Amino acid sequence: MPGTRSSRPRRGASTRAALAACLLAGFATLFDSAAIAYATPAVSASLGGGTAGVQALLASFSLTFGLGLVPAGRLGDAYGRRALFAIGLGIFLVGGIVTVLAPGIGVLIAARLLQGLGAGVISAQVLGAIQDLFIGPARLRALGLYTGVGALAALVGPLGAGAVLAGIEADLAWRIVLLLPLPFAAVAVRLGLRGLPGRVATEPGSSLMLGEVPPAEGSSIVGTSTASSSRHRAIVAKGRPRRRTPLDLPGIVLLCGLVVLLMAPVLRTGTGVGIASVLAPLGAGAAGIVLLIVWELVYQRGGRLPLFARDLVRSRGFVAGNLAAMLWFGSTLSLSSVLTIHLLTLPGAHPLLIALLFAPGALARLVASLLSARVHGALGPWAIVVGLALQTALLTTLALLAPRVDGQSLLVLAAVALVGLGFAGGVIEPPLRVVTLSFAPAHLHGVAASFLQLTQRLSATYLVALTTGILLGAAGAGSEASLGIAVATCAIAAGAATLVGLDRSLRRTTGQGRSAPVSGISAERARTLEASTATVS
Image (tube, one colour):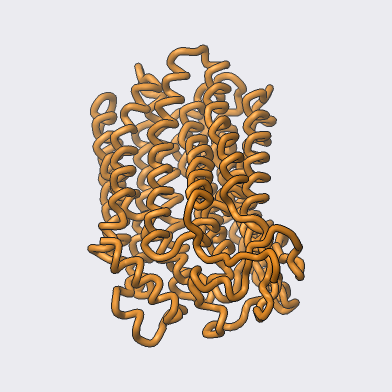
């Protein structure tokens, strides 16, 4: 086909610009996520809203983040990353400007919903682009850099927010905090337009058309590596895909609706967890699950690619990896939220002091993420289990000790725990992403990466609302006892992730991939994973 070029991993200035754009965009969205908790007390004092307002403010971003991931990932697979990346950044920037100017809590939450949607579109392109442009050890290193950027954002975001809140009147300070990540997003637009690939079309001779349900496992397309994805995809300067790209928006809305259904009782009462708030949504939730299953079956029988793509949900390794990732991410994000909010309410607590308290943990995560390739090379998939077990142990210890200490002792305890948790998070995230996404066929890279992020964000949406409700209660004021219960909830989620991480499909070590594939892993993908684990050390 004239004017086409293969989608095999590129080298040179354009690849470096693409990676820089991805990292900078990720930094902007993760900076925003890290800073928002510090601004929450000032927002509540300025605009009101009570406990429910705090919960909605913290959870809204993750909800629409997840909502935008899958359709954006599929559109990126079909039309190329560049346009979707720029659109996502545009939405993020518009939402950010509205948050800065918001006159009331309702407008602020609505703007956060919009901003989260933009961040979801961005993230889908970032992870999809890394999948497209890098393979083997290079992909693991790129994901390690992405995790490192997240750790850097977790360090710089709170410090920037603390410094602003310390030196400026509260009503203006929280607006400036929400403004801080926007310049990074603006620069990322320029880099993305320069380096990210454009539209994607199907090459002649490919048996897979965009929008069709992919062939069954074991076909000539499923199981191909990124390096061989040019058999069925090409990046082109002009032209349109020959088939309409299925988005399965009803399936996405139904899934997000189930999360909102579970979250609504906590938001409404502001009393945390009780028997009634747990049992009330079960009937409607069960009906929603049945409806979602029926819809997905009908959608797939129509020859379209459903939200729960067949080749992904039939892979035991992909499902296990998603479950471990969603529990780990929800536990991590909810802990950061409740611990920040509680420490900011301590007598004499200063936002900049709390940010400095979190800094060693962020640095530990940054260092661990940069070393994660070596750790994974030495331990293989067991690195994931070790990291999750360490996080569970630290959260359990913090939950048990938090009600028994106060004041400076709690600050010291939190600082020590955060260093260990930061190190564990840096060890866990890159290999968990690589192992989970290694189960995805090459033509579903964007879909798989988006689905992984979707499950993580929906988990975070619920757990952040749940744990902040536990912490603050109806009175809107936390205590050491309620903090202990909230942290224990995070520990339970991390413990469940550790158990899932023990699943045999995630522990296939180098050499085993040469045997007959099991648990949905094709031999080709097993060899790709083997290369990434065998050479990074």
